[in-house]
Length: 171
Length: 323
Image 1: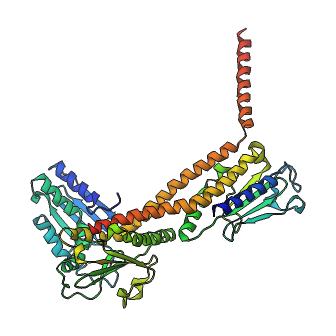
Image 2: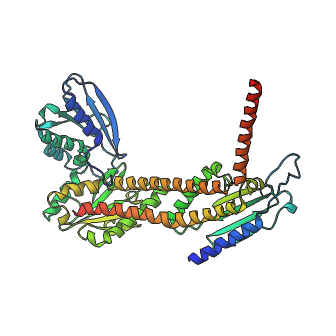
Image 3: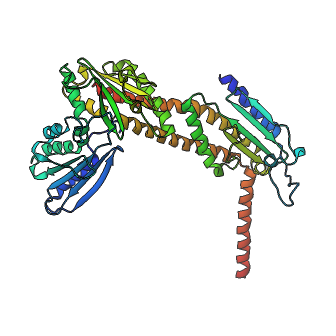
């Protein structure tokens, strides 16, 4: 299990390393504008083929690349309703703090849970490999911690609390 | 606080303050709500500062729960038995309230410890009134009989327009709660919480506890109850109470636990939501730190150099003006 996760993350890391070669590129339609081409999608010659990395049906990662920006969309695994709520809450929590994250897109791409938009400006003032580290770490956190640790903690708390209740009745 | 306390802190505080403050009374007229269902109205007047008028509004009863003069079965007797001469019930109660009591503070016992016991009991008026029918049934269980003139299935109100059900038998009482929650997140959390309840019951240390079951569909005991009372979105919880759970002093504890089961569950659902929030906050902080690490040192260096050159420039400037 852990092994397939590592493979999945390594694959994403390699893809990002290859895809993240961005350069400054002014808009072709409007003078003095500089927009992320991956969002506009007006000129097909500036876009590259999107890459879809799937671990299984519930977990996938879409990497869309263009000349001056790259968009990474993630879908997080949600096994049951409790995990669904935890993941939804956590991702909403993050989206609301997108300002602090800079590379986070406020709204995820349709069909995904969370999206990042990295432009050439981000690449200029941040180390590229550390930026990739951040994204992989983010995936680990939102996957491993939301789904396993947090659920386990919540259930454990509930367990203790219910034990207390029943204990009182039996005393 | 993992378990809910039975006396209302608010009432207890008001009563204690009044006793400490002595004769120089001020007008008090305030309302409060407990657990989102029971309303209290407290009044003190200047003329007789030692008399408190306490009105209690019970949750609105659904059609299947039977009330006598707006109060649960046996409530009046329970009040008389619990408070004695200190409390006088006013009939009819105030508008919009189900019970109005006049509490005469001069009749309290003079011994401080005894007085505190009585005050605590007055503050637990909710347990006395709403728990009266439950106590009646469980007391019969303790003596292994069935209360006379009681149906096979008794509905008791515990939340506005919601009731829980008791099926009294000579050797056991089955208590069934249809659990309802408003928020969709609350529903999911409560459902998994209730399943944990069943899990927790299975541990060896709790063999003496009442057995506990959870099911998404109404259990067999509730056959024949009208459909409105049975639409529960978080399933049904069943406790089976045996005579050994209601012996002697355990009775009060069991009554209170059963009475506030819903409040207890929803309180802990809110707590786990709060807990989730704290964890998420911490997680976000660590992620932001990871992103900060990605920012290149070159940029930080540039800023430093820039600041340094500014300082040097201003020093030169100062030097020039001095000369």
